[in-house]
Length: 258
Image (tube, rainbow, N blue to C red; front, side, top):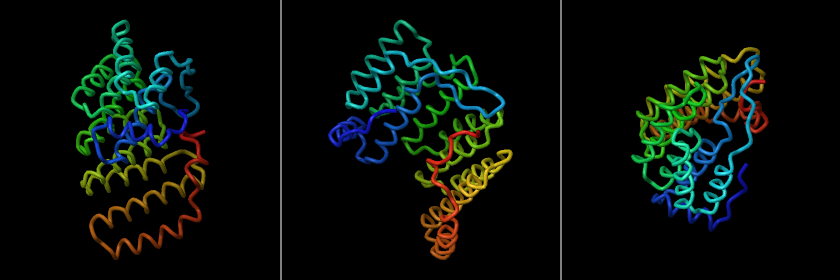
């Protein structure tokens, strides 16, 4: 896991993003580390299927992580591009290159690398990782429609391996993009899809069930606020307070079914 950034590093990254919205820039940094610089890009699948054993991080990934933490995006981009000169079909290098370009505000160029990553990915989990990176690229531009196109494909991948928790996570991720883009109908639709998918988990623990219900209530409250529906907001807020005593912290739940 990357170490916490100092304030001056975060400021440098915000300037490099070319975006004044510090929250959006931070989202980009999180995405570039979580998606582009992951070890194997293998997405978790539930038991009894087994995920491929993780391999040690390539040295260029470790170096790129450090450069990004320091706000040296141009240097990180150069590192990834040099890697692609010798390994043009490297999935980690393709996604990493695109993600840094995204972080620099060069989305059109970034998506060329994501498209190539989707094309060369040999395994379904690798393709899903590339598709999610593409979705996040559009998310940074608050493009709900294009984000949904790619998130839907990732959602379907998780459905194919019966990983209902991750299906819910992806649907909620897409919904958050839509609510921030102002497409409240799509946001409500995908929050509901995420809620229902998460509850499909076999032998779901009560705590996780409460978590999905809490998230659905919270989503409805956010949408009511955006619509100016104060009555529904008050009713939903009351239900949220009631359910908050039951919903566990997400950090106490594993990111995939055990």
